[in-house]
Length: 436
Image (cartoon, rainbow, N blue to C red):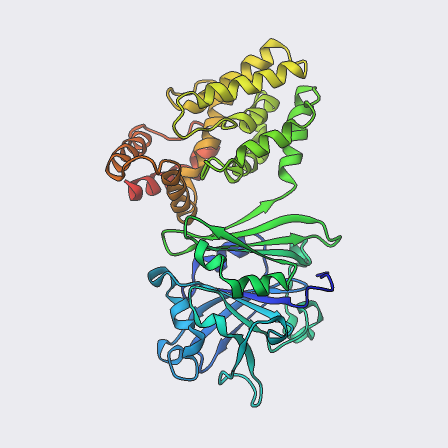
């Protein structure tokens, strides 16, 4: 990790609390991450599993003993309160630095947990007495994981193609994100970003670089209403790859600046579910299913445009999105047949009729795949939809939402293609029954 001279704190590792043996461990492994090591912390009442990158590591931490975590030697860390973040609304994160907190204007105290060798102390920021803030401290180790002795280093993330973490973004409720002590340490560490989340949730994003130092993926973890973390890996190369592939399949050249205008539209502030996250998820689902498409260029471009216009109070979002797509295709020189196919594919996302065309079935299945997502992602989706309709009174929203979800359950199948039905039908019905 390269830092500017004015940034004197370097991130050593980050911890986040999970439940013992939580699903997040296996979720990270399914994404291709390799477990580096595990250890227990005798006397502190915690244990962990760590995933090491070249310059820092991610620690999943859980409580093993409430009595130890709340004993006099440990209690000031507020580790017990942090482990109860779901119930208490505390912060589940810790940020460990290499450097010196006092010299950065962050008063600290010496923490001496029983598992450390005698005479060793961990410098902990006094501001961390507030459990609504991350625990900020100085790691007792001063080497990057790539510099650890082989016996400790174990497996880093080279098999997945990742080396260093380029930056870290920690999402916190607005009050915590604005806390001056936290801003002080963030300003002293260039790779650390603090983001205020109006939804009051917590999130952690790590920008992963390949061996050449290029940002290829982002590891994205976000808290959900279920009390677990939604874990995903964002392929940062996917949008450009998809965009180029779609226009190449059409034999056309995209209008200048159109891709960025679309991405900007997907990032508008009124959106919570219909965001770039949804677009990326759709594109990622299409990529291995392109063999199912009769007109792959139109299908891929329709996904780019299907929620390009989005007003939660609007009744004509799909029609306006389709207008934008056909206008862009006309400017690029597309024939009327291509324009009509793209328009029809976008309009099918109104979900007001059963799709009969194979391309329409594929596109609708991709759009509805969120219903069969893992429970943590489905819970996040449910909260995101509610945020988009926050202007609707609670009782009315719950009644209408229940009607919509019941409509999906009423049919013999939710998904029109065998491949998506096999993967998502069972989980979708389970999610919908739980939500209803």
